[in-house]
Image 1: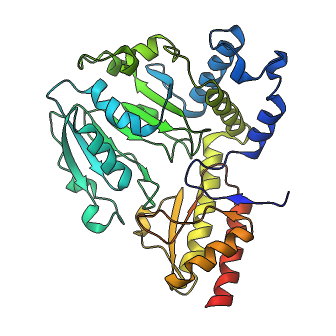
Image 2 (image 1 turned 180 degrees about the vertical axis):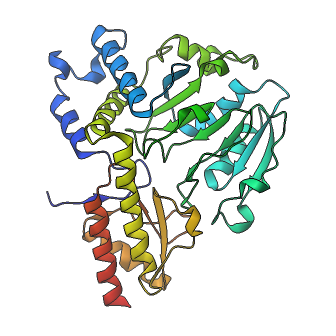
Image 3 (image 1 turned 90 degrees about the vertical axis):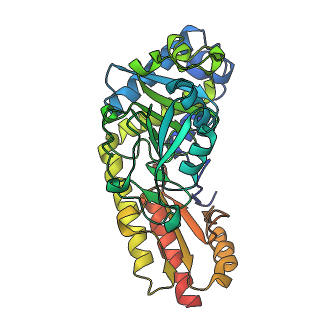
Length: 361
């Protein structure tokens, strides 16, 4: 099979060594005679694996003991609603920082369960820059402060962790988790859909400070309460066993590569190289995002002549460069450079872009 490179924003590329190992083990996992998907989540093999996976994640992120790690079903969008249900009492309020589509959706989905205070928004700037911390209007009574460190559609990213005082900081890290070192102790709750930097869709990783599990919130079914999932070691109901297993293989892959410091440097180089190619194209390609806010994970760009978009996408796919079409809200192109996308893929994209510009400029 000829080499192809996947730049999809999600579900996204998985590390090739992870896929190859999963392929080898698919029919006979750990000499059990069955796949991991056919194992009881109550069985000794699966429980031992689950413990290894959590231990590897705790090692990668240096997660303090006073944080619980949960492997939940669904997607991050589900938790836009479930987080206020768990962290805020009835009639309470929460702060939301909106710097893109997903931050806006998180605030919208929270609104039936909590009074949403939009503490800051860059909507008036078309989400091309980040609202400065000095402009945030935080509510002193807020149950938590929610933000999206990396916005996949608009390609903006916070490169530091904002100081929000005593309120727990809640972060949707679906598109940036494990992309570099992170001080977990700065957060009250981190959650991430798996389908960008962890594994397949259908799994949500959550890291939550244990004291927040004890918050008095509101009446709800056990299945919605994070404390119940923590007490049951993420097995309150039958979990996504396949997703959990693949996440574990990804964590091992990250450790083998040297951990998150090494991955962070790798991601920095990839992003800098692609942005340099865009900025150095003489205006043939453009990235409209404020330089200080540019995302390492998602790089949107446009061509100087939008009538060339169809040709660019057709020719790039023929060249083995997949999923470069931009989000429908913005158009243009988007290259997602998640952990599994190697430097060779970025170099191949840059080479194609230069050739295309030479032929169509």
